[in-house]
Length: 186
Image 1 (cartoon, rainbow, N blue to C red):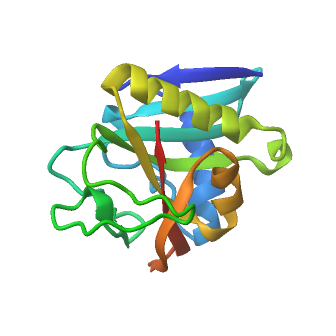
Image 2: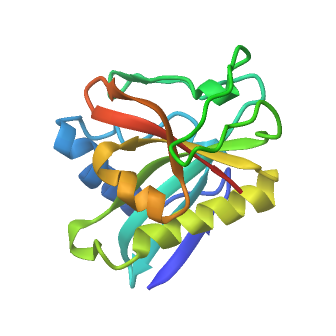
């Protein structure tokens, strides 16, 4: 199996989007096309290929310096809240490890989204390879200092095993389900 990276502006195969749809959107009843996210052309994409078959996918995008990571996904009709530590009015809080998330040194910051692995490939460490490649490329390309994501509850143990930490309360992403915000210092 091979890890493949595409940098911003580089083309992506349709099979990459097919896996995103199959894993992330189809189970929610979303229409084909909803797997294409705003800003995909500005993001780093990584996937694992088993010969010609895409087995696991993920993406990371740079969070603009004046943004807090909140987003509305028109296609999924859902909204994700801000990452409090990236907000201008942030009052320091501790993450689940007890570490106080600082008020500075967090940027450049990236957000990881659209992580998924086909069922038949789960449990083989492929998602960890995708995530690690996104982290490394984010540091190389944008000199990212931190990463941020909104994890589905079922995915929290995976992210924790890869060095990410939860912070703040659980919340519901409309049309998707329960999530918790996570972060990682690179």
